[in-house]
Image (tube, rainbow, N blue to C red; front, top):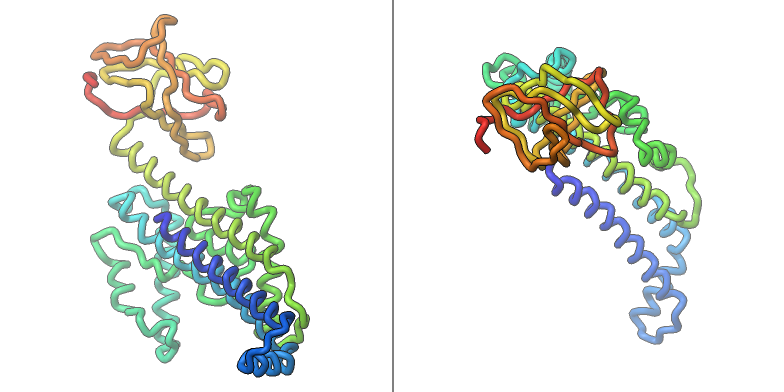
Length: 333
């Protein structure tokens, strides 16, 4: 995920904040006693339109905030799907679940395009190109097939949108920021729906800072969840092509020191070891120190078998039921 995608999201929200400031500045003009004739005409119009103006501003801000949410989530999902082939290089590391979803969602999209030929939403989508990617020898994915086809992106709908990406509900809901902000996001969608259906709304502007701050936090948390998934793909690629499994783990001390057999390889402080948990989650941890026979060293290189101890981390518990991988390397550093 490109950090510029997140910055564009924040920029759009900042534009809404600037718009609200503009509203406040205009409202302050009414309170000042200005003699300029053009200002007097403005104030006369302002006084007559004041009540409807507040209603309109309320609607505009709510709809705009929701639009930012829906637009950027769809942009991020497309970017994420487009990044997968760039990271994995081939589809051998892509799970059967995502392959199945890709096929089903692509067929669904082709069907929708055929049924809604005159819908501007689909006018730039080529069904033949979508079908070609399903049968291509090159590793390509139809990113458009994974985005939301309807509005009302409540928190639950977003969870469902992320499911085909192998980002499950548990992973999303355990995020403390999302857990804190999701009810406010759902209230924003509820207000947007009321406005869209013509329901009468409050005549005074609400405190939009609550919705703006929640949207910022919620969106940023979702962005980094997608980023974490891409990091997992990157690690999976490295395990297959650049790292190899440590076959002989002798012991683990204090859940942070790994004792293992090193053979025909080399390691140094600052290298990373990939940890695969029992449920398949992947993590990278830096080697903080190295010991051989209780003597601390900066690096070790060997053609033979040698027992090594490495201190990995103090913020993550390593366990015997995990798998550990080190980088494939010639034994000279």
